[in-house]
Image 1 (cartoon, one colour):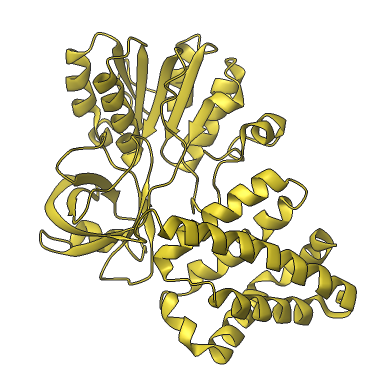
Image 2 (image 1 turned 180 degrees about the vertical axis):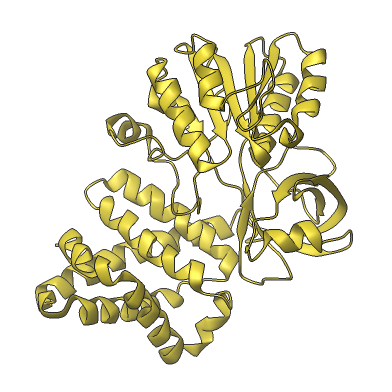
Length: 387
């Protein structure tokens, strides 16, 4: 019944989400401050969150895991347990309005019970997390370096130690767009001095990244939410690694390589870095310097829009020329198209999907990795397995 009702309102999703936030802010104006001024991105996230929950209604382990992560992530917005009933009331009113004649007392009861369980899991996860960690970490930009092609390396220092594992990502809020959180990966393994370096590309028309790249300067203050992500090294595995990076996707790959070097592991690591032109091969020199110090690291580059002997080709094309990879763990980070096609290449080369890890494509809290059993059972197109 939940899935059927979502299918009914999906064609009207944009209007429904506009209506939902309109009545939420009218009935409960005190919650408006939890949301960014520009609601375009937020409206899309509401629907995708609902779709993800409905997709998991018959998979309780993953549903609890997803809602728990969502509840912990919402702490940085200032969401509190008393806010959940207000959201549920307005959500059901919106569903009733746009489901039309399909809405019934029975369906209302199903949605009420389903939302109540989701809210309970989210609230309990947030309350437990509040006993263990702050909702946000205050940080100061201490270094800002332009790397060309609209990319900047931004180093911050947090007021208190910021826990993360190499390969994870952080959410960041800037003073230029309050409540608009964006996700960036530390470009190194954890340091002892509470500094973290991020690689940020200015996205044309973006709300946050252009300000970080072009306006930010040392002394500016930002906030970090808790880290997320499962694209981390498995200490139990002795398999070699193949890593694929495009653009600022080099950041988590570099962090993983640094962590591998720090741990003294003897597994071989192949890193492939891609760009459209040789001038855009961002991060290649850094990785080559690391490879000179570690015999187990090999670094190769590929360019897709320039004819250069030995470098010409897309990353998926170059990947297919090397290998075999079927005994490797794979880590991918970069543009969606590159990650999707590289995943297909590695699957054809024999790597099981559960050993191909990559960042979510958009909002980590909505695209968190599923538990291993569901990942093994999933038979979708490349790009549907988030990690």
